[in-house]
Image (cartoon, rainbow, N blue to C red; front, side, top):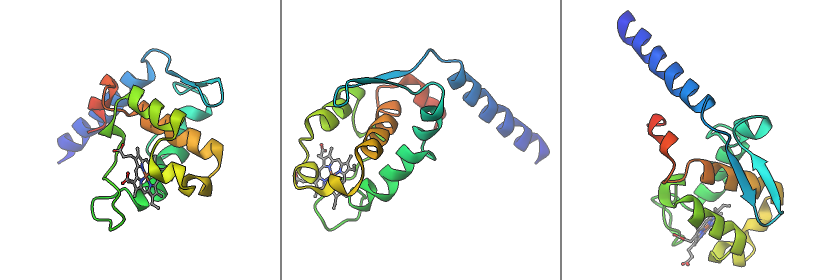
Amino acid sequence: MRQISTLLMFLVILCYSMQAHAKPLNRYDAASNTSRVLSDGPLEWESQPWGEGGKTFKTFCRSCHNSHNDKGAPFLWSESKNQEAWDRVFETRYPKCAQDGTWSAISDEQLRRVHDYLWRWANNVKANICRG
Ligand code: HEC
């Protein structure tokens, strides 16, 4: 039992440090014409599943986009799309839920943080293998 938890600890630390030493992670946000640093500083935390980006996605977007909703919303998670596709979602706001005003329930900065989270953990990101 002890050995197993030691091994688990080791893996967790290994995964975490691999990410920490990854190359700088910057997301260009076209809507606000700013570059958002996700590899360190406050957004490093906020773009994690447990940061504001991940949490807002879970409580707000997932309130409809879960696998058992009756609203006709497809199930969504960060790996539903690649980074370019998530950029398109937030730059053009083509989804019906964005067009019909649903997204205005949260602030622009909260939306940018959801975008940070989805982009960081999108399906074409190699570092994601550690997340399980
Ligand atoms: C009140 C419910 C609701 C909320 C909250 C909501 N959506 Fe939606 N969304 C929908 C529905 C319903 C559709 C499908 C509309 C259609 O039939 O085209 C949709 C469509 C989409 C699509 C297009 C589907 C696809 O596969 O490309 C995306 C992307 C999307 N939503 C993202 C989001 C994000 C990101 C959030 C949070 C910021 C969010 N939605 C919040 C109801 C919601």
